[in-house]
Length: 307
Image (tube, rainbow, N blue to C red; front, side):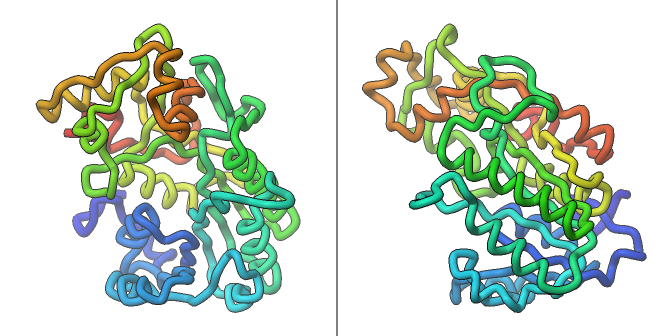
């Protein structure tokens, strides 16, 4: 339903007094909160004292707690009727490195009292691993190729188990690269200004994108309309290789196009983190997002969103 008050749409009147807990209330979480403001009571978990004032200024009640310290999460039990979980796994993990202990701690806390009606978990498209440029829908078996993607896959399994055990309608959003002009580092401009090279076409990989506002709208749609234990590829309609994406951005910004390198040269000239993004290629199908969640993308392609 359209709204004259915010760009992300309105909620039915019967949902306006619910309590929504956002775990991982960064840029996307704040966009979700902006859409829900004055419709529900907003809560956000934070372990940072300096963020409490920011959250309060956005109409969000901060709850002190740390996903890395499970004992601090007791107050989350029964506090919300719906939960948005956008917190990433730990960047580094020891011991059971493939497990997302943060998600495990959150779900354990939520199970101590009455369960929420719905939960949305923000996963990553990285759980598919390298698909050699093939089109990928939600039925494709997971083959996470990095430790962080493996921890995301573990979180997905934990969310599904929780959903079945606690009778919670849980949705999993598999999210690719997020962009937006008003998001820190949310456009290719900085990388273009640095002159960072990209791969030549025959070595290049397909990359997927979603505008931050469309992602926030997808979270809301899943929170109220997602099917139980359902996954959704949360990607736009773009079908671009990475180098073509940066060429498009360079043309829009009036900047030089990046240099193209063969993969053999890139392996010695580019950072390992950047190379990891250049090692997986897939084209995500978003039919389920549109059909089941009835999401009409405001920014259907990066050409539209970057403008």
